[in-house]
Length: 137
Image (spheres, rainbow, N blue to C red):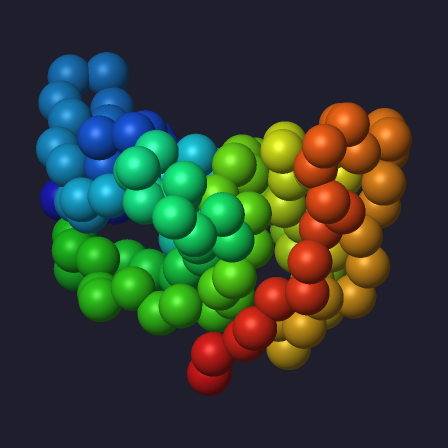
């Protein structure tokens, strides 16, 4: 694992670097989506169920830089999104997040502003539509 990770894996138990023979946890937390672009590792990070009950929009998008076999401290790019999001990825200059709770796909522009919410399915009954996010730089 010295030359670089084979795979990055997100889980409820942390963020892992893995290959066929080894694994190691490189970040603590609750992660449900991860993608890589350049030296950046971009993740959806959430909170415990108890914390989510108190603050539903407690999910964040964070970026880690991977250098010399280590992750730098995370940088929060977006906060205030629903805790129950999952997959993330870049496409055509934008960043997309699957908001499972609201049954939509959130789109963020290159400055990490919410560009659009793609409502693929109707929101579930009793759930308010996705709310605006706050952004930290």
